Structure formats: structure tokens, C-alpha cells
Amino acid sequence: MTDPAVKVENLWKVFGPRASRIPGSPEGELSRDELRRTTGCVSAVKDVSFEVQRGEVFVVMGLSGSGKSTLVRCLTRLIEPTAGEVMIDGTDVLTMSESALRDLRRKHVAMVFQHFGLLPHRRVLDNIAYGLEVRGVGRKERHAKAREVLDLVGLSGNSASYPDQLSGGMQQRVGLGRALAVDPSLLLFDEPFSALDPLIRRDMQNEVIRLHHEVKKTMVFITHDLSEALKLGDRILIMRDGEVVQVGTPDEVVGAPADDYVRDFVSEVPKSHVLTLKWVMRPPLDGEALDGPELPPNVVVQTAARQVLEADKPIKVVEDGKLLGVVTDEDILRVIVAEEEGAA
Ligand SMILES: Nc1ncnc2c1ncn2[C@@H]1O[C@H](COP(=O)(O)OP(=O)(O)OP(=O)(O)O)[C@@H](O)[C@H]1O
Image (cartoon, rainbow, N blue to C red; front, side, top):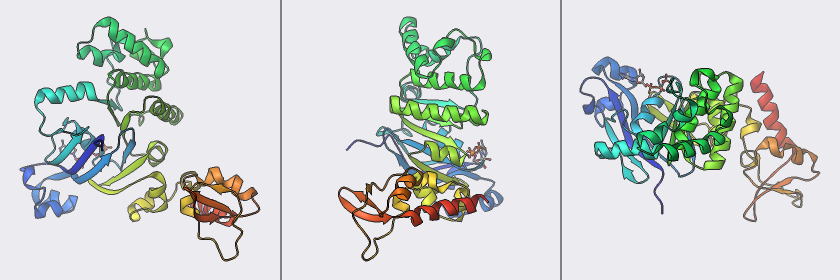
């Protein structure tokens, strides 16, 4: 079995005086406010465990202050964790030497930030080639690679521009290109699109989806925006006050929220865009026709709606030749009506 791309176990980051005594102690169990009041410490990341599979887009979502940035920075020790374990591609990050850590950050993991961090006096091509330059790759080779990546991020016409000649969205494409140029096995995104206009933001989200199809890299993507999380994530980890509240696929988070906090978050989501037939099917009734069309359980309600509504028999939800349940007009309409009531 191959190692997961990222494995995090019982990870803590506590800021404040004598922070290392907090994980595993009775104080560690206190709520954030109580801990701050009694010890002056903040558990930015509190006993967090999760795994990211290779090729997966894993989204970490939570409100401001929930600990997302701290968590993602702990993965490569840009912030030193207080306790726990971080494995990247099967290698223990927390025991790495300084030079191994530098290698990890230069070659294996690339980050894209909200503030693009571009070098203002360098052309787009040299900004994209920057990571390769740091690694000591020769000019000709790094420019060749950067040209390849320019195409990939839709900037082929802008190689000679300077960052301040580009729009925010295009600057973020340069940031993406710079991350991709080093051919990392893991891409970390820390709210990369938060500063962009909504329309540009949507373009960039689509760009990430397209890039993911093309390069198939493992991605950990941080956002405070639920619709972004649902759109991009294969799975979503929801954080609150440093803790994991739920980890699940978009349809699991919307279909079975772990608690009121998540339920509240997802209450405005257009359910038919996220829920799959798995969530709306039901066992067949006695005597119900079972010779209607078949669909798999992972089809989104919105996509299946027309076929279900047009069929004069129940749709059979079938996986590996096994009948899991049936879906009729009523089951579909229930979701759509609930959605309209939710939006009202
Ligand atoms: N250097 C620090 N010293 C003390 N407390 C910190 C430090 N960095 C972060 N914190 C606290 O840790 C908690 C988590 O912060 P973090 O920035 O990781 O959250 P976030 O979810 O990324 O929020 P945002 O989206 O606003 O950046 C917050 O309460 C924050 O005040």
C-alpha cells in the first residue's frame, strides 16, 4: 500500500507561555476562551488528525481564527508544531534535519498565498522560474520549464510583463505557475483567491479544477468560503476553534452535517447542486415498478433531475449491479422545494 500524501496525527500548535505543557494535559481540554483566561495560551490547532490521499483535493474550511493558516504552515514547519506527527509521502517532517526540510520546501511542496509574493522587478517568466533558480537549475532549462507552465496557466502572451502590469487574477496565475514550475508532489493553497473579485475568483476556481485534471497533483486548499470548498474539494475538513468538526465529501457535509455548527454553515447551500442520489433514494415500495432506467448513486440531484422527472417509472439507483434504492419525481422535488424554502 502506498503512503498517503499527507498524514497528520494528534497535531497541536499552542501559542503562549510554556505552550508545550498544554497538549495532553487537563488544560488541553479547556475551551479556547478558558485556556486563554487561565494560562494565557491559545490552541490555534488542537489535536487535529487527518489523511490526504494522493491526487486528492483536500479543502480545510473554517471561519477566521479557526486555525487554518496555522495548520497548513505546520505541515512544512513554517510554524513549528507543539506536538503531534506530520508525515508527507511517508516521511516524518517533524524529525527532519534543516537541510532535509529545505529540500522538502523547495522540491516537494509548493505554496500559493493570497498575497502573491511576486518579485516586482522580474518579468513573469522569471517569476515563474524563480523556484527553479533557487534550486540551482540553469537559465536555459528553467526558462524552458517556465514556458511550459506559462501555457498551462494561460499566460503565454504575458511572459515579458512585470507583475504590476497584470490584473489581480493574472498575478495569481503567475503565483500558480511559480508553484507548478518546481513540479511539486504537494500544492498548498492558503486562501489564494480571497482578495479577488467574485467573477475572477470563479475563473480561478475553474482554473484550479482544470489544472488538477491536467497535472493530478495532491492539493490542500484553505478557504473560509463554503461554496469554494464544495466546488473544489474531493473532501472537506471543517475547523472550529482549532479543532476538527467534520471531515467528509461535499455531499456528506451537506447531507449529514456533524453538528449544528456545520448545519448552520450548509443551510444556504443549493442542495440539489451537491447532494447525490445516494442521499435522496429510498427503498422500493411493495409492487413498485422496477424496470425503469438505472443511474449510479453518485450522480448529483441536479444532473439527474430531468431524467427522473421525464421517466414514467421510478429510476433505479444501481451500483455494481446491485439495486440500492429508487428515486421518483417526489424525491427530487422534495430536495428542490426545500432548497427554495431555504433560500427564501
Ligand atoms: N503568532 C501567534 N501568536 C499568538 N496567537 C496566534 C498566532 N498566530 C495565530 N494565533 C491565534 O491562533 C488562532 C488561529 O489563527 P489562524 O490564523 O491559524 O486562523 P485562520 O483560520 O487561518 O484565520 P484567518 O483566516 O483569519 O487567517 C487565532 O485565535 C489567532 O489569534
